[in-house]
Each structure stands twice: as C-alpha cells, then as structure tokens.
Length: 215
Image (cartoon, rainbow, N blue to C red; front, side, top):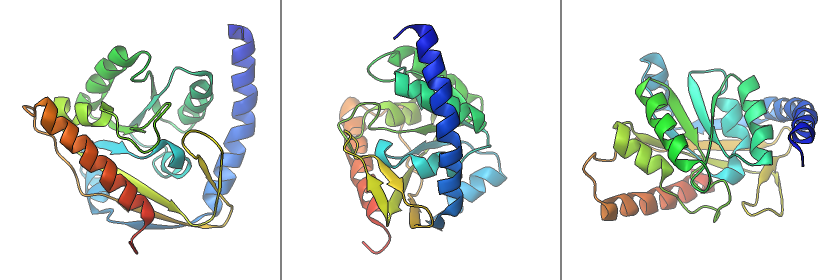
C-alpha cells in the first residue's frame, strides 16, 4: 500500500475507532484495586513504567489518557492507527518495537523517562507470543531506576477476537476489574540471569492480576 493510501486508511480508521473507543469505555463499570502507588505518583509527579498485555489494551489507554504519559507503538499499519488515537488522547507516542526500530525506541524511552514522563508499554507486543514478557519494560526499569507497575485487567464480558493476542473488546456497560501490582524495581547492576528471572516473575504476576482479585 502506498504511503498516501496508508495515510487515508489510517485517517478513516481513526474517525471510526475513536468514537467507538470512547463510547464503550465511558459505559463500563470499573473497579480499581491497589491504586495507592498510582495516586501517590500522580500527586507527587513521580513517573514509572506501566505494563499491560497487548490483548487487554482498550481500558488502560482510556484510564490513563490526558496525563503526562508516553506510549510505545509499533511501526506497523495497525500501529499507525493506534498512534493516531493515542495522540488524540494526549499521549506522547514513540514508534518502534523490539523487532523493528527497537534500538532507537529504547534510546527515546530512556530519554522520556529521565525527563519525567511515565511510559505505558505492552510487554508481549507487537506480535507476541501472547502473555510472554519481553525485555523492554525490565530493561527500561534497569536503565532508569524507575519502577514497573503491572496493570492486570479482567473483562467479565468481552468479545474475544481470533488474533494472536486474543484481543478483548469489552461489551458496553459490562463490569471491569483493574488490579495494579506493587512497584517492582530492577537493580542497575542486575545481570542477564537476574533480568530474565524478573521478566518471568513479572509475566506470571501479570497473568494472575488479570484473573481478578477473587483468585
């Protein structure tokens, strides 16, 4: 697809996506657990790295809109549509991923975090495997000294797409539970083995958070 056709496609998709995105999110009945660190960070202008699974992204992007937050979005065509949506929601958007543009994206991530922004990231994106933690969030925490907060979202009634991430679209007026983890710090001198262990632990914790407070 030519660049002009891609831009037209992205614009058309954006104008269809944004109203639906806002209507669905504003209708949801949301319960939030363990938000104390988030509240303290917002009050005292502290930044952190917020991670949630790619397949659950609809509510996180809505909940944290309009704040001093940045988002990392892939360089794909779908990523272009998401980037337009997030820009309209006042996010600062970084284009890149671990598979394409990763080095430049990581340099930008370091700069943005050090300048005081909070980073939102889907650690299993942009192409999976689903719910397997990649290195981005942990590497950013190691390099900057900022904590990771895991955000687990439990959709009680959602349409699950046949995509690599089993993407979930919550039904209007349905119930949602958000579970934040406690802050997770990564030592600056952590070796490769320690980083891999933290990645695995974060992945396991995030899966549990998505199962909800009852479990």
